[in-house]
Image (cartoon, rainbow, N blue to C red; front, side, top):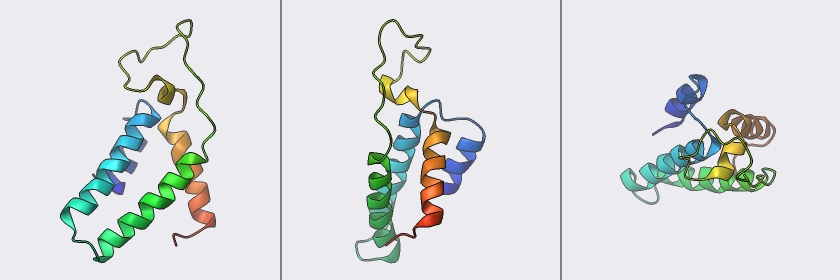
Length: 104
């Protein structure tokens, strides 16, 4: 997984919910750590990107609990709460912040 693949999936509407976007991001970071030795530029960048992403993720508004009365079209979702936000809304938040503050 890589950022360009995630962008393409986002542009094609392939993320049914924010949970799937989060899963792909974490897979990308895991791959960076798996295939790049500690101390390399890629490994260090992955560490910084992970910290940055996690900080932005925590700034997301709390997810609303999904009740049995709600129309839940994604019954098979691993995380029903995650279906409350679209992946594009998360990317929009992260993109806006990324333009304002560079990675450390």
